[in-house]
Amino acid sequence: MKKQKTSGNQKPKVSYRINEQIRVPEVRVVFPEGSMQVMKTQDARRMAEERGIDLIEVQPNAQPPVCKLENYGKLIYKMAQKDKYLKKKQKQTTLKELRFHPNTDKHDFDFKTAHLEEFLRKGNRVRATIVFLGRSIIYKDKGFELADRLTERLSTVATRDGDPKFEGKKLFVYFEPDKKKIEQFEKWRAREAAPPLPPLPPQLEDIEDDDDE
Image (cartoon, rainbow, N blue to C red; front, side, top):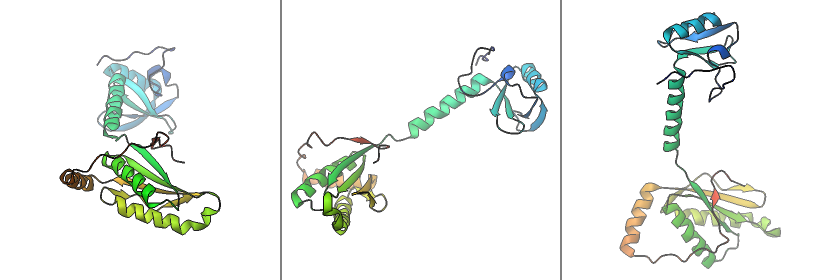
């Protein structure tokens, strides 16, 4: 890869100082073979130039700053490839949420839980939020009982992520999809030929995984 040239006014694409941009008196140089040596910065720059590579400051806060002898373009390329790999590995998940009340009736419970089950089957993380309105906060036990019912009901496709947690007047319960359980559930569902669920009301929207209340 062609070596990237820099001028006094051109900034590198990332926050690394290179070559003439490094103005401290001395640096600790990490050589390609792994050895290190503290030397004057001007000597390190001259060495990099003789080798046809760059002097790159990788740890500016060290005493003295740590620099690598490496082709700057190749370093940026390797970093971009690493970021690409990590993004590919990272699973983009959506957090789905449905709300309950401690006195949620059986019909509403079954309806919403069936949709949580469907969300989990599609690989989404879900959050059941049990909302305590007004004086209903005194019935915390009912909230935990409902959380246990949810856990039992969703156990065919999911694993509960930790214990239910109170934040203000809301009890949050998280569930993670379980791939093996889902595969078994899908086989059972295919045998039973279960009918599709009715659509959710439009006010029940998705929320992002990092948008926890």
